Image (cartoon, rainbow, N blue to C red):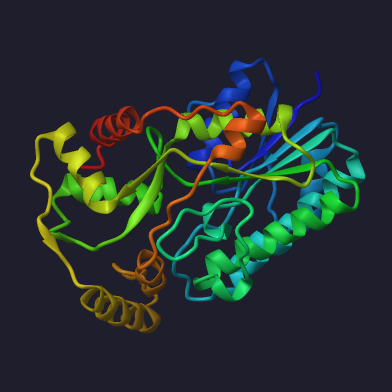
Length: 324
């Protein structure tokens, strides 16, 4: 069996994708930067960088499958050009390396942020959406990177795209912005909340969805890998039931959150220290990101589980690993 390359295996979703592939008997090759470390994974590390095409060609050489999960996932960056270099040009570089190698399949990990959501409604893969609707450099860079993946698919590279929602579960090392909500709750650092909504998904289901897309996905197609549409208040209520801690009861007006975002983001520009409340995160929170995974269920056989177990695993993992 040819090796399978996974980018982003040191991150949250990528780690779970790499682990699942190993469980299925794949010889996993993981693209890592010199500063990255693979934890609890049976994988062959290959040092490289999405911005360095020769290193990607070495990483892809001999591989049959490529899972491009890596991304520069930051809702604030002092130099936003870094996000475009990694997410857009990095994706182009990897797709070109895969094309030259003639791989059998590429699974590209996009984001639910690239899905159109009608006001007060539920989004899906067919909802029209434009670059102008993308809030912040991260979402814009991922939107453009998805376009790059689609261009390669149109030109013959067997690429399928998955759009995960907000994953939760164990091994959220960094943690992700969703994991930080859980961690802030555990630390008692969330005295109030805002009126927003997310689609939460068990990260184990996200990994399985990647594999199903590889097996059954149509070239050039997009598949939302989601779970449950939940208000932030409902998510905090679930965490309260799991932990026995009281959920915050104060709903913060949006204008207060926006003012805090302006202030902390402005201070971050002066100091270079990431803001506590990135303005782009506040802007994103104004929209309820409720979406449907019916296409993935229908075409891939994707069946997400309840997020309650994933939230419990996340809480237990953060507690067991000294995060709180």
